[in-house]
Length: 456
Image (cartoon, rainbow, N blue to C red; front, side, top):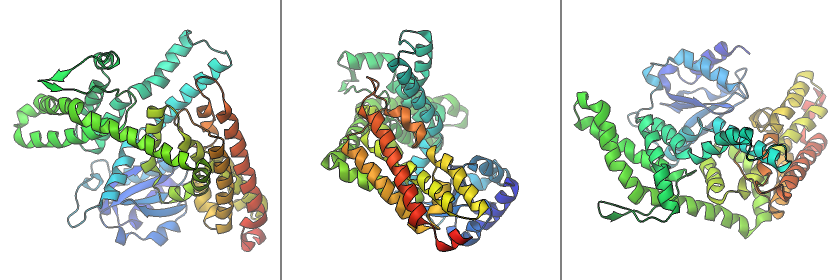
C-alpha cells in the first residue's frame, strides 16, 4: 500500500491540515480531532483505498486503517508537520466538547501510549507463571527475578508511568507527573502503610493507602497539578519558571494528594471494582451472554478505550478480572466469521482477505473483519453475536477469571493462568474460544454471506 498517497487523500478529505486540531492513533485507527467535522467528506474517505471505515464518536473522527495504521499515521503526520499549529490541542472558538467527549478523549489520550508496554508486561508475568507452574524455572533463579522485575515492576510502579502519560495529555510537565507518581510508591511511604505507622502533615492526619499499581489517584493528582502549574506560569517571572514552578506545584499537590486526592481516587477504584464484580455476580451467565455478544459493537463506536482503566483497575484491585475474561473470547467469534466467509466466497481477492484476517482476529485485532466482512454482510455479524454470546455465557457460568491485563485472542491465553497454579479458567478460555470460533464460522458459512458475494 502507498501510504503517502493514502495520507494525502485522507488529509485533504478531512478538510486539510488546517482543520486538524489533534492526531493520535490506536491499534487500527487514525484518531483525528477536527475543528469542524462537518466539512470532512466522510463517504469519499470510506471509498478511499486502504480505508476500512470511518467512526465519529467521543469527539474524535476515527479513520479505520487496520494493522498498518502506524505507517499511515507517520505519513499523515509528515504532511501535517510536527510544528504545525493545527496539531496542537487547543480550544476552538465556538466549539466546546460535552462531558462524555472530554472524558473519552482524556482516557484515550492517557492510556493509548501505555497499552503496548502494559500488554508486554502482562505477557511477561504470564509467561513466568507458566514456567514456574511446569517447573521450568525456579522463583529463586536469576532468570526469573530479572524478568519478573520488568513484568511486575511495570504494574508496581504504574502510578509513575500513568503520571507521565496523564501529564502529557493535560499539557503539563510530564516529568513532574512522573515524580508525583513516584511519591505515591516511595519505599518509606509503602513501609509506613504496611506497618500502620501514624502520619500527619502539619497536624493534618494522613490516611495512608497502598498506591502501588493504582490508576485513578495519580490521574486525579496530575490533573490538579496541571491546573496549579498553569497558575504559576502566569504568576512567576520567566527566569523562575524552570525550578520554582515544579517546586511550588509539588509543594501544594503532593501533600494534597496524600491527604485528599489519593484517598478519593482509591475509593473510586474500590467502588468501580465492586460495581463491576457486583453486576457480574448478579447473573454471570447473563453478563457473559450480553458482553460476549455485543462487545464488538462498542468496538465499532471506538468506545472500548473508556473501559480500559476499569479493566486494569479490576486487576490491580482484585488481582483478577471476570469481565475481561468474557471480552477476550469475543475476538474468536469474529475470527470464525472471517474463516466462514473465506470458505464461502468465490472471489479470490475476497477469499484471500478472509483467510488472512483469521490470523489477525485470533491475535485480537478485529476491525478489519468488522469493516471488511461483518458490516457489509450483516448476517455474518449476527453469526458473531451468536457465537460470542454462547461463549461468553459459558465463560460467565464457569466463573472464569483473567489474572493479568492483555488484549483478546490467543495472546491472552497466559493471562488465564492463576499465579497459584493452573485452574479451570485456563481450560474454560480454550473451550469458550473454540465454541465462539466454530459456531460463528459455521453460521457464517451457512447463512452469513450475501448471495452476490457467493456468486462473485
